[in-house]
Structure formats: structure tokens, C-alpha cells
Length: 72
Image (cartoon, rainbow, N blue to C red; front, side):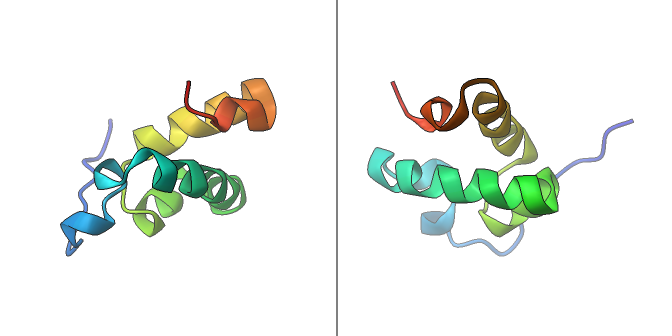
């Protein structure tokens, strides 16, 4: 059973998906570090994105280390 995850009261410019490449490259390592410490859902809420986005970046980090956090 999965629960629906919604972003509430978020300014559109603060959403992860609305950030440019440079902003995301700075944000991703912080998001992954936060997720490893507090969990994916709290990180998603804190960084205004979805848990699936956090999970994807954490997986890339665990597989490839810091190199996995770079855009190609």
C-alpha cells in the first residue's frame, strides 16, 4: 500500500523541478546528505520535491559516490 505524497503551500520557484541545472547541482549533494540522515520523505519535504526524486539521487550516490551526483 502506498500513500500519496503531496507538496503543500510551496512557492513554484522553490520547487526542485523549477530550478536550473546549476541550482540543482548545488542542491543535490545537500539533499542526499539530508536524506541519508533523516530519510527520503523528510528530505523531499525539506527540498520541495518528491520522495522518488530523492530516492533516485540517493541510489546514484550509493552506487557511484559523489560522481553519481553530477549531471551528464
